[in-house]
Amino acid sequence: EAGVAQSPRYKIIEKRQSVAFWCNPISGHATLYWYQQILGQGPKLLIQFQNNGVVDDSQLPKDRFSAERLKGVDSTLKIQPAKLEDSAVYLCASSPGRRGQETQYFGPGTRLLVL
Amino acid sequence: AQTVTQSQPEMSVQEAETVTLSCTYDTSESDYYLFWYKQPPSRQMILVIRQEAYKQQNATENRFSVNFQKAAKSFSLKISDSQLGDAAMYFCAYRTVTNKLIFGTGTLLAVQP
Image (cartoon, rainbow over all chains, first blue to last red; front, side, top):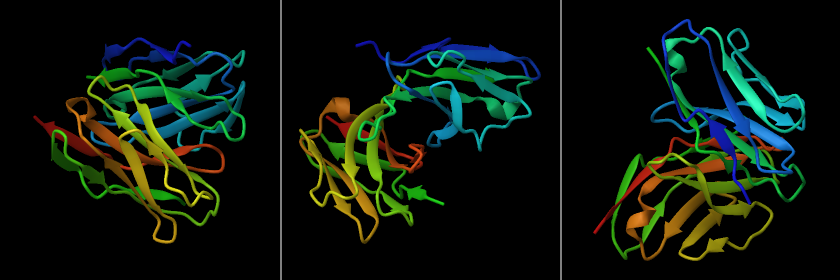
């Protein structure tokens, strides 16, 4: 079974530029998550989708971050404009979305450096 | 709000020895899940073990086991017969009712040959 796919793996941009990350979850997984992991910290949830609806985006900086999951499968996370403090690894995870099957499986992440 | 605390930023263990990583959490919920994830230098987060709060029996997965003390809100991970491949950052995580994971700050485990 293929795991969670993410691209690109690395991205370097200058502040005030825009960037987008892509995630393809495990086939059949209804729930998709985007986490931000700043160096030296644990991941922090940015947004959670159940199919194509948003469950939790309480920690998403909505003035610059946006995310979508239009067909309930893959997802895109965008930052516009980027700030220096956005330098982090962005992790995508998915889970089946059924009770008793809530384990989240993570992708390899996208490492973003904002200069 | 739920919180997860890992008080050991770094730990070291000799190959073939046993090491225990500590984790405490705070919650007012009675039904929840706890996880240990491993993150090697490649940065892919891998599930090590999970514990359901309503189960009194401690979870085990091969060389990995937990000591779950619900009243004390403690969830430690024991790694037996440590191997070089166990070297990684280990994160303790709490799952909320909406399936959001709240992570601790991690413990960096070094395995000495």
